[in-house]
Image 1 (tube, rainbow, N blue to C red):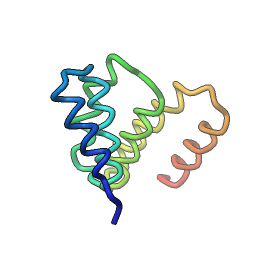
Image 2 (image 1 turned 45 degrees about the vertical axis):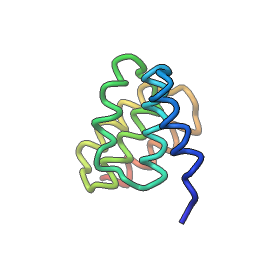
Image 3 (image 1 turned 180 degrees about the vertical axis):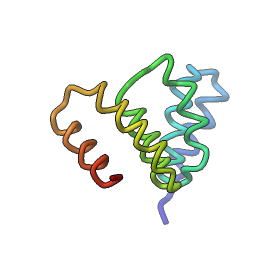
Image 4 (image 1 turned 90 degrees about the vertical axis):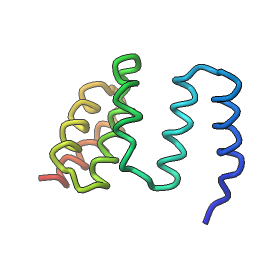
Length: 102
């Protein structure tokens, strides 16, 4: 069991001190991943994708669907992540994930 006191404190301050909402949301997403609470990640990530269409957000979303045994959704977002990244190591990782879904 990990001590999440610092992360909890950061997120509470981020929200209460009226920091950029997107920055706070990224902290909340990190916390959900740390706690292995994948079931709400899509609701947290999807609104960010229009502003920040980054491959890592699509990968996180794909992994969250994978953890929930939603293979079709996972595949869709892994493919999107693959189309956005130029990093060969990340491409290889995503391709491996896609192969596992076949």
